[in-house]
Figure 1 (cartoon, rainbow, N blue to C red):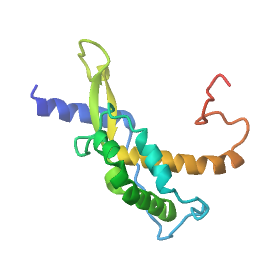
Figure 2: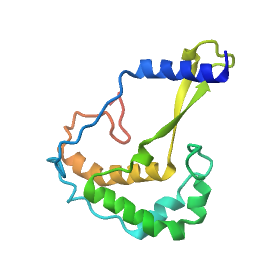
Figure 3: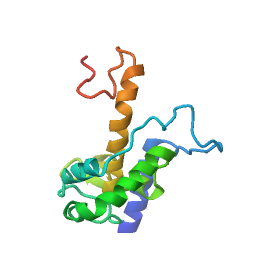
Figure 4: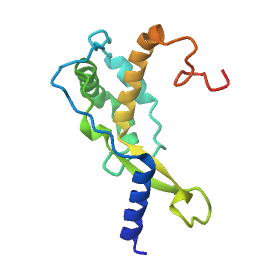
Length: 162
């Protein structure tokens, strides 16, 4: 099997396991019922602090630049990144480039023989991951007010045993 043929078959296998792609249609409304106007803006200091915690050993997609560039250049990058993230918080829009991932097959066994012997690992744009964390941090206090006390899924430091 050629490398190209292998990649095509592996891609088809991953697509079949995940089901059909989800399409998101916009209905022309600027915002949904959940208003983003209440989300506080991010400060430049907060962006610098988050960037200082970037893990340079984490893999990123081949279209991305290395994390160490952001870490070393955080003084220069933090202002435009802060503006981008604050714009995302105001408009509820996430840059399309940051939504794309590169899937890498990682063998589960030492000698893989079927496509099930591989697990897909998604490599994302590292500034997109940083932005996702900002959104989570901004939304969590608001969600904690409306989530039922018996809800344990997707809660920090809680799991199925609770």
